[in-house]
Length: 265
View 1 (cartoon, rainbow, N blue to C red):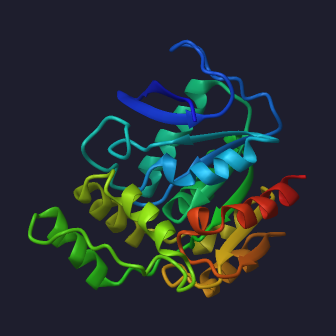
View 2 (cartoon, helix red, strand yellow; view 1 turned 30 degrees about the horizontal axis):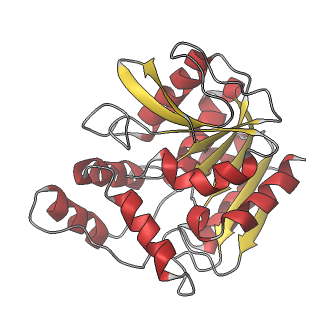
């Protein structure tokens, strides 16, 4: 995928797009279909959604950014709160000067997407919420592990917990390779920010068309949390993808995109 940088609030924000490359100051052509803005999860990066972006680019104009401190964007620290990420992404959208987008939010990115729909509705045409929750349940043990990693007292944990038991090992390794692209301290404070999120009471205020995608074997944001979001957002639809866990975008990208294309049409 072609990539570009744009200055947003003093950060050099790196993003992926489809179609032809353009000069540094020229926004890529996003006239095909709908603009789909992929918002990645905690400690992740825009490239995590590459498979979905490639599939969706046949009919639409996907864009996937790296948040500051993530992937190839500038910055060495996380933004510390969900609303700070939302405001940065809103500023990114305004800087591009494009029409409203369908937001594809994965995990923390899904909560950011919901917050954008509530506080910056002018940029949001619709929501596609993937493996996310209105209130995350993050075990203290997980936070403690990443704090130890951040402090240099432990190595990064490479586990299979984020995937379905039926996910092939090569796909799990892909996820691990994305994991190491972001500094552990950024991941740790992303998780702290997620722990502070609770959008439950405000979900009924969301008016944009909403699709929720859940991995049947997701233990990080279990199906019950997806059902809660569906029940509270007016008119929301839920699609459950079999043999997929929390890393649905790389485990079952075709199945996810089939549901997205049907929703958008």
